[in-house]
Image 1 (cartoon, one colour):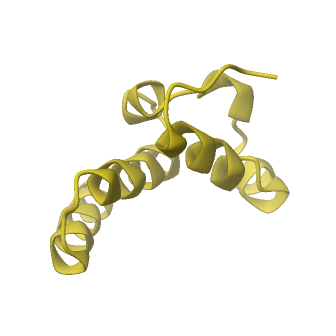
Image 2: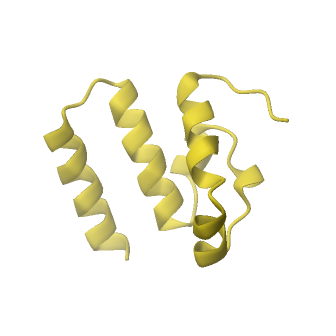
Image 3: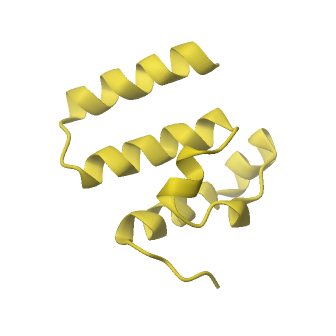
Length: 77
C-alpha cells in the first residue's frame, strides 16, 4: 500500500480506485498517489478530481470550485 502525505491523498485514492472510472478512462490508479501527481496527469478526469479535492482542502467555496472545474473540463474535454 502507498504512503499518503495528506488526507487529500487518501480521498484521491479512494475516488480514483473506483472500478467503473478505471475501466471507462483506462488509467492505473497506482500512478497517482498524491494530489500533486494527479494534478499533473494527462487524464482530464484525474485532474478534475484532484482539483476538487485540492480546492476543498484550501477552503474554497463550492461556487469557486464549480466554476474552476467547469471551466477546466470545458477546455479539456
